[in-house]
Image (cartoon, rainbow, N blue to C red):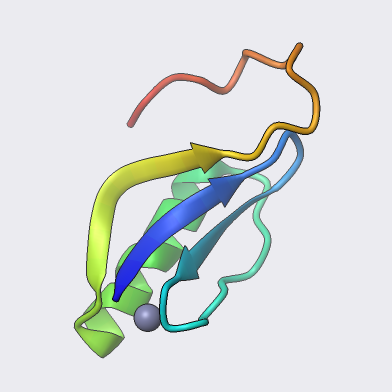
Amino acid sequence: MQVHVEATELRKRAVCDCGWRGKRRWLRGVAVVDAHLHAAETSHLPLGARVDEVAEHQSFKGGSRRL
Ligand SMILES: [Zn+2]
């Protein structure tokens, strides 16, 4: 099982292959923390700071900085 972060323009959330979904967050970093907490509790694999951009509006580029 692998945990990663789904990112939309307004919300980021950690999701896992096991079906677990974290709370929706304003900040990508917080969603990444959620992913790592889930990984720690379940020994599922956190994929570092992998973030899947789920494009709602392609014009938004302000959040592309990688952790
Ligand atoms: Zn999981």
